[in-house]
Image 1 (cartoon, rainbow, N blue to C red):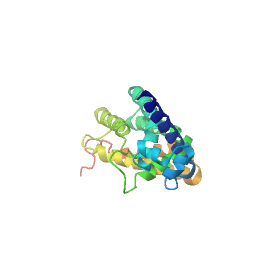
Image 2 (cartoon, rainbow, N blue to C red):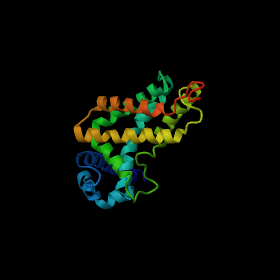
Image 3 (spheres, rainbow, N blue to C red):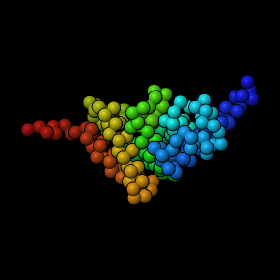
Image 4 (cartoon, rainbow, N blue to C red):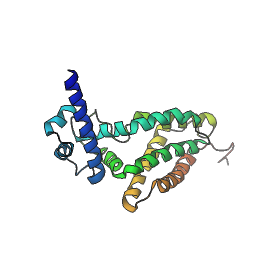
Length: 207
């Protein structure tokens, strides 16, 4: 069983490495399971022994890629300084710096989110509970700090933040924007979004 497990682990690693490169080189739609198998030097059946679908392969590629980054972010989160807006911008800036090294791969991750045939086992963009929880924690702390209104719908704020974050990658794909440009754009968007849930001075709007 030890030898068989080692073989499965080796096949899994080859498939994920091949898929990561193909998703980055030609995108999600153009990448096929056969192309992944050919690049990895294994049979199509071997791919399906470990993964249920192309979306599942992509999900595992991203989990393996982003997992260590999010562990590090979780560790440093308590040490981030500044306003709620500053802290959220710092989190997104770190992600942009990381993902802009393989923009097409992350675009593939976003594209898979809109596939009508995703299985429950896959984790497309927007369903990463670690990332979402991190941002929600910062927003909740913003309420305690007085940066965010107590009655703000934090889940809705999170949805808008994630939508802006993902959309900005289209700029990188179309005009070649780098991490610095995307971070600057995101800072403006975060400022605008959080302005909508900023506590108002006493008597504001009174007649």
